[in-house]
Length: 184
Image (cartoon, rainbow, N blue to C red; front, top):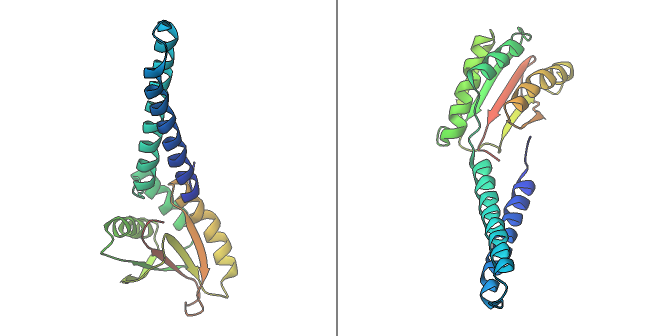
């Protein structure tokens, strides 16, 4: 299941609301009449659970937001198998060495391309890259773009890596540029 920035922000906000409600409830128990012990204990437990739920939700949203993009060995093998269906394609892979997470992902993509029999035409280091993973194709390669995006894009999405496609007029025929930028 993919979560966008808006979804993660919503989860964090919901966690903060639960945290505040729970804390307000626990503090308000001090003003409860002393002769209602069972109600006071029940509400104390309920508000403590609400507070714990809010903290857990905030923690989980932070973990999801900061999780590194990665390809497992099985996902790399599946990606290699999908890439092998495009023997005529040449690959250019761009990344930024300064971004360790993006660079590590790019190296795994290079390994998958090589294992799939793909030809790496260029592995370049760029200083400025768009965010996320971008698959770029020549304007005339409509068929390659459609087939490649369908097969390879699905493999990336199965690995929880969001991919967008782009057209680049300067790319040669049957060339696919994979740009791995910082995590969106």
